[in-house]
Image 1: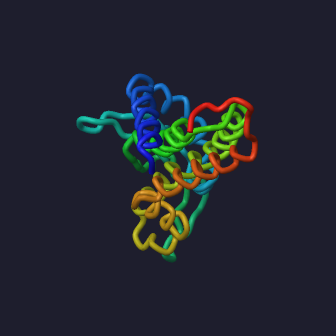
Image 2: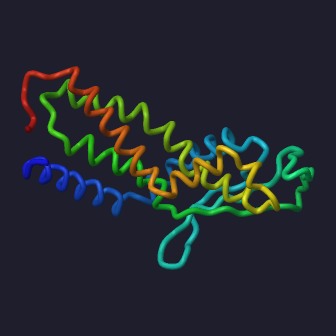
Image 3: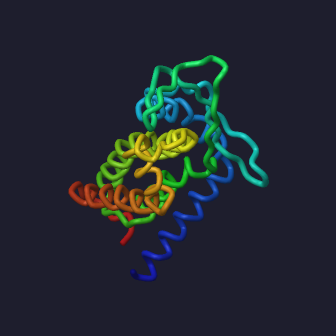
Length: 197
């Protein structure tokens, strides 16, 4: 990595961090409908009653309150909907912004040959991020709910595997892959005016 590229990425990182500090809470709140839709998709057996930011010590957590929406079998035992039964699952609220922030640093910090390249890479990132965001945190929250059921390891299946991957560094890997794909796609649409090398 050249010194110029490192400086550009560092500058993009400072800019993105400033945006997260200034508007991070509003960004997370704006993503709640997408996260709710993602949760319904990955855990249709569960009803998401509320999804909101809550204080968690010195930071904040994204907390989901859920109940069973339809009969579900876990480890041979059938659980049925009960309006009195609720469960909570949480994850650090900052996890919602981690993947978009990393993608933004790569997309904004990597040199582009012109405006068409910028537009192409921003378009690829904008198309890919919503689906990944809708999977990331909702799967982790759903996995947290399944963990409350005795013998739920087999029931969690792909949900539990994906949650463990994301919490084990997968967010960084997926963000780098999407950012790299956006940059690579953008190079197919070079512009006439250089915007940095």
